[in-house]
Image (cartoon, rainbow, N blue to C red; front, top):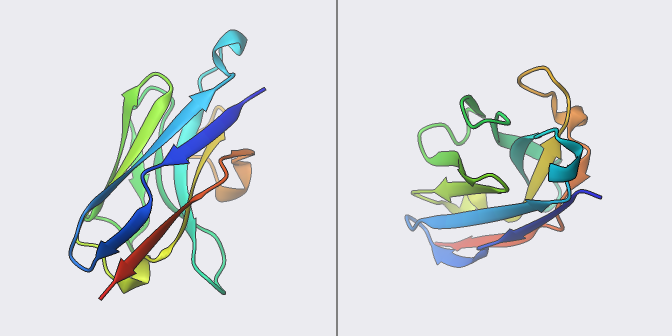
Amino acid sequence: QVQLSESGGGVVQAGDSLRLSCTISGFMKSGYHPHAGWFRQALGKERELLAAISWNGGSTEYADAVKGRFTISKVAENTVDLQMNNLNGGDTAVYYCAVSFVLSWPPAPYEYDHWGQGTLVTVSS
């Protein structure tokens, strides 16, 4: 059973940086390594895909809203981080880590089928 757990959320000031981490378990026995992505959902808005990384860490994709400010990285076989720089009030949201076992790259947002519980990031001005 694949499980994901996010950590690193909190309250920061505008202009600050924050690093989120996602630990993924339960996939190694299958022999399939998933692609991973970070999403966020702000109050009253739809969940959006921010960044994705391929199963081997060799490819990344970013949403325009975060390109140049956020960096996704595979820091270990089962850990995917999201480094967030120059945060602003528009980045306030619950951030989710998710994985996709589809073979194609990049996965479509609807192809992520295992999710963490989310971690709240609040940026104050």
